[in-house]
Length: 287
Image 1 (cartoon, helix red, strand yellow):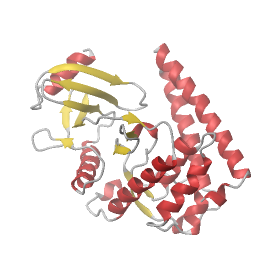
Image 2 (cartoon, one colour; image 1 turned 90 degrees about the horizontal axis):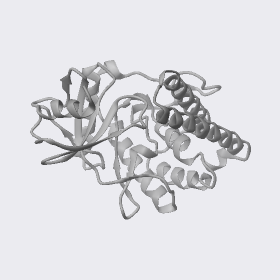
Image 3 (cartoon, one colour; image 1 turned 180 degrees about the vertical axis):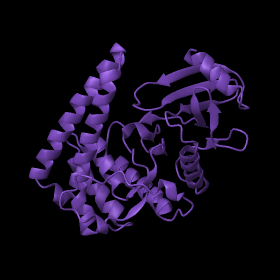
């Protein structure tokens, strides 16, 4: 069954009218993500690769909790009384559509807006108590060198804060933080090193690290061990990304996607080189 027929079948189970148009977002490694236009709404539709309905409901409930506290995250559109629809193509969730462009260019104002949004999300996630013990898992266990992990605070974290999940409006301010599909219990600083690895590890962006850290730390104080761990976490993030992209490349047949994956490998290696250079030239002073 083609994508159009899949979406028509899924939409008939929601009060969203008929499919008019859709666009497959093909830059994701996992899941299938569609921007969908119906006769009534424009929506974001995700078909999960995971078969764990409990986990998907869990992350949708966290998203709803953040939205009810007026944070810049999308609403989850319900299927009957659930946030998940079980289709023959996989588990499905639908979210409100956001007018946006992805975060590309950085500035002082955008950096200040970014730390404020991440601080607010962390403030609420640190106080979120309704999470299931099954999802108190910590992915960041290895390659910490001399870090004393007992001094690293844990919390629910987004864990995928790269530029495609940070949306900017026409006024060049942060409008939405999206895609909480990887949310889990992990070290609080893991969201910070994700941002650094995917957004700040580029030429002429190291000055934004200091701006981000000064703002964020004025509301959530980080201890010295948490600060010391950031370099090693950035390195781990980039090496993990290389591993995942290479895995995908081994099985991909589509020439366009192969080209995109190879481009990602090149860009990630450039970020690793920039990280090593930044470490030699005083990364700690920026933290």
